[in-house]
Picture 1 (cartoon, helix red, strand yellow):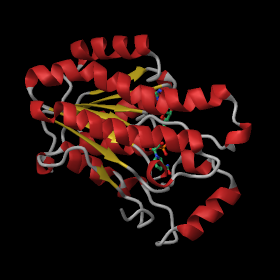
Picture 2 (picture 1 turned 180 degrees about the vertical axis):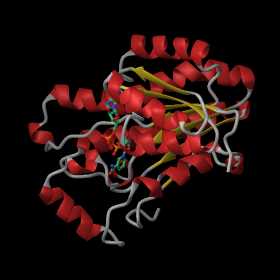
Picture 3 (picture 1 turned 60 degrees about the horizontal axis):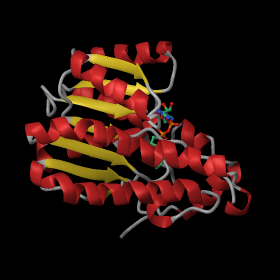
Length: 249
Ligand SMILES: NC(=O)c1ccc[n+]([C@@H]2O[C@H](COP(=O)([O-])OP(=O)(O)OC[C@H]3O[C@@H](n4cnc5c(N)ncnc54)[C@H](O)[C@@H]3O)[C@@H](O)[C@H]2O)c1
């Protein structure tokens, strides 16, 4: 399959977990892929190697998506090294557990900055080119906690509900330019992020899930490939949920 042949994609937070799965899934479909992440150049080199095994162009840039200058510089440099961006996946995200009554303001700000300001900054960077070319896909990785809310995760839940709101508003703003904006709101997926949750949270969460198991990265990747592909031309402003049945809105 080469459903994304000739496309150029950016995946934030693509050094590991869901983002890496999406980056590799896109490369497997023939897309050139740039990964933006805060991890080391060594990790970046392993990402590029994995991408280029599919005979596509892979790029790794060390970028904090919450930093306006770093994002601007990264997309300027990608315009030279990769060319016009067709697909942006805003996937970089962070989480922590605090009850609101005990949450430091800096922790609230950190989560909102990476999870919500980051997607805004990256979307803002790609939109002028996409509007000029009348073509683009933006896929925002939200979370089912943005739909359900999660105790000890008000900051994370608010950031992800914000991502869903950003998706809906931006879709209304730019779909007429043939730029389709959608979100993916996964349930709990086996990654380092999930492993960072407390045993108590994990046990409670697993028991709530209709399927009684967490999902795998490869159960999310096909949704991103679909939303990026020519099969998804009438989807915009939507939130798709690989969540094992936990959210059935
Ligand atoms: N794993 C889950 O259960 C789950 C469920 C729903 C949604 N999500 C969302 O999916 C996305 C990926 O999560 P994951 O489970 O793969 O997590 P992960 O922690 O395994 O990977 C996140 C990646 O984002 C990168 N990152 C963190 N801060 C960054 C920043 N400021 N700038 C650039 N990159 C940064 C990390 O270095 C890492 O490579 C996140 O947005 C997360 O909120 C995850």
